[in-house]
Amino acid sequence: MSLPCATSKKNALEVPCVLMRGGTSRGPFFLEADLPADPAERDRFLLAAMGSPHGLQVNGIGGGNPMTSKVAIIAPASRPDADVDYLFAQVATDREVVDFSPNCGNMLSAVGPFAIEAGLVPAQAGETLVRIFNRNTATTVEAVVQTPQGAVEYEGETVIDGVPGTAAPVRLTFLDALGSKTGALLPTGQAREAIADIPVTLVDYAMPMVLVAAADLGLSGDETPDAIEADPGLLGRLETIRREAGLRMGLGDVSGSVVPKVGILSRARHGGTITSRYLMNASRCHKGHAVTGALCVAAACRLPGSVAHDLAAPELSSLVTVEHPSGRIEVDLSIDPSGRIARASLVRTARRIFEGRIIVPASAVLAPPEGLQQRGENAHDTHTPPRLLRRPGHPGRDHAAL
Image 1 (cartoon, rainbow, N blue to C red):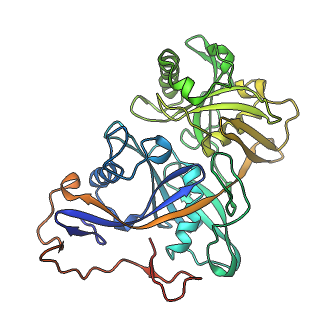
Image 2 (image 1 turned 90 degrees about the vertical axis):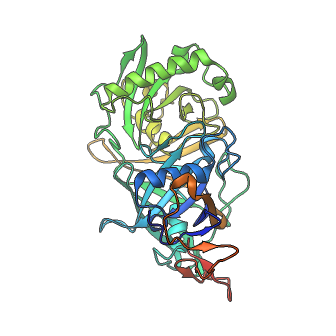
Image 3 (image 1 turned 60 degrees about the horizontal axis):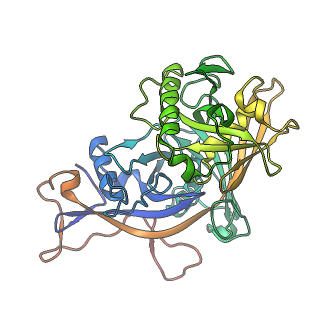
């Protein structure tokens, strides 16, 4: 195992990380160079760091919920048309599973600020454009970050539903989200088909999803996430539909994956375009809505014959408002002359919460190799945090550019 920036303290690994909120999600951000290069070792490290598997993740920094059991791994760009690479990991709370199949648009909103403060992207006066290549879906997203006086600004007046208070806006533009995992907006070539006698739309824009009308499930569509999670019969039906959808979309056996997602749709109730309940996995319903899922639902609203199109407000424009349990998400679709969705934009916010080192038992990853630097009673405590960066606005203080 090679951990260039890790040290050992009584058989524990210490690795630099930053805990950040991105949109309505939260999780640790790591530089890829600070993590084990071996994928299996990296996954074991992430499980131990988050405290999985355990419902409360009490032995790690996860929050016991899929929205707070997420990890962002950042690296210098691997492509000339990007500034940084972003690899997202969904860490299961109840199983030893680290899923790299989805992207997370909420966590994505914190990638730009993190990259700037890590010294990977130079800050500009006023605003800074960060071009992000998402490895999970091989797509590119542009993030516009507020950087007055050449420093990231987190304070502002922007409100997003599902997050208390206000913050500086981060504008995200998805450039090539069509067919993110399957290569096609409609992987089966159909806008509507049936699974288990339920009409569905299988669509892939930023996130592969299976969309179903609430009424066809015997629901009103405004059920709370808790009510949906408390109905095992409903969850079982949806999981059966989701697994068949995965096969039809060319994703194979998805029983061990969180992709595709499920969206339960109904008509808007508060002046928006459509109402959605978003299933994060087989048993958990999002308290708000995933960004990538909102993009997918918005795109489906523009598809004649789809479940979403039939339920969407009739006066469709480029701005699609998805109503969810915590409020709404507004998605601005850019349509080219052929009617194809060229790009999609929305506004999120982010917050840097904590920076330091996460401590993980070495035994949870691998038996410590010979010569691993020890810290403690007989320590040679000379390790220096990597990539030290003096953050503007904080004279006289050095901060690890994590």
